[in-house]
Image (tube, rainbow, N blue to C red):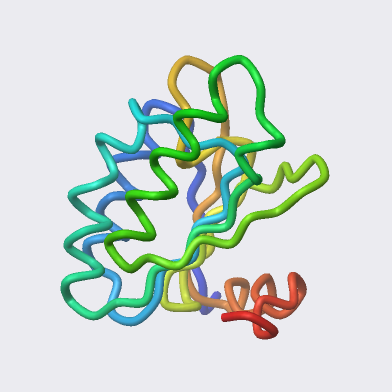
Length: 148
């Protein structure tokens, strides 16, 4: 018997499942998404604010707004400022940052092609792995312990 579960989601089913995970988090939420748009954040803000108000540590890893073009830099900067004003820690990456993942309580790992903080129209896939040590493996592989 496996000590984990794995489910696949597309852009139509991802957010309802992901919001449920955010609302069930107990200790820590890490979201790595290269792009941030105001339209997508509008939907995510209630869950992020609720998590933060419950004392859950929330970390966002994203591209430096200066690495964006086509108007994304302004949206990204505005949302990052709002996240930081709330008290959420944001880490900026430079140099073609492109990973898309989330780690919830170091137990649930979301990974795939969907930009969690910006997806609107694209067709995407995300895998949710619960248990099995996958979330801890990813946390360690990406060496998040050096700043989280």
